[in-house]
Image (cartoon, rainbow, N blue to C red; front, top):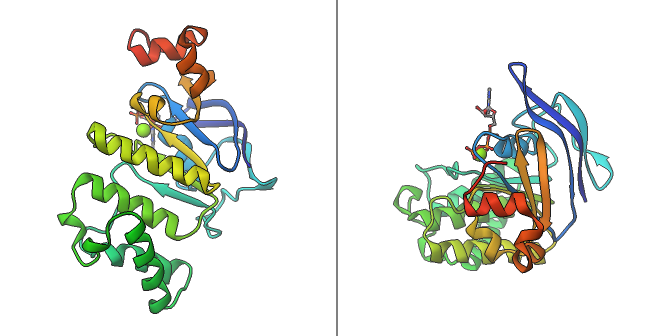
Length: 240
Ligand SMILES: Nc1ncnc2c1ncn2[C@@H]1O[C@H](COP(=O)(O)OP(=O)(O)OP(=O)(O)O)[C@@H](O)[C@H]1O
Ligand SMILES: [Mg+2]
């Protein structure tokens, strides 16, 4: 289980994350919703050691997540909003490079793992294409495959559907559901409310003062009026 307890994050004296506490179990999907600027990406960047925290504690299975140095335990995989793929490398090299450099697989081992993942994500035909030639949906699948290749405990995805059409959004939602069934701990930052309909997840609505409302997506879909702030946010009528 990932447990985030009483986390504060300030930028230039301004509190961005305000006493943030939430926990996410293996196999659970946490969907961080909220307007632009409330700190959704910041929280994911913290989990990936791309940012530090000002106070609070983050543990994975009871052990503190080491936030003082670049993540060397590879417990967290990140799928970035802009994918952060190596555009000048081929699809398969994007995966084998990480396996060889980060977890020291041999080239043959890396190729075998990469081909298996590419087949799973429907990209094996594209193995030798350059990333710059992929569509947005294909890049998204490659970014997910690359994150999964390192066998993290936690997968963070920043706006995974922002560049996708409704059909591809459904595909990505299905992939996320499959990852949950494989018992990853999953955190998604998004303002794509379409994901609410397509995922069984825990919704955390973030506002200026931290988490302002929480709901299981199934409960919210069944009775949106019970969660007025999430309902207003989803229907576009107020900012939390
Ligand atoms: N490195 C930084 N230095 C200073 N301020 C920053 C930095 N990164 C983010 N911020 C500020 O922190 C706040 C939260 O940013 P963040 O990117 O986490 O928001 P978000 O909820 O992901 O928004 P969006 O929905 O637009 O992606 C914003 O006001 C942003 O300007
Ligand atoms: Mg963001």
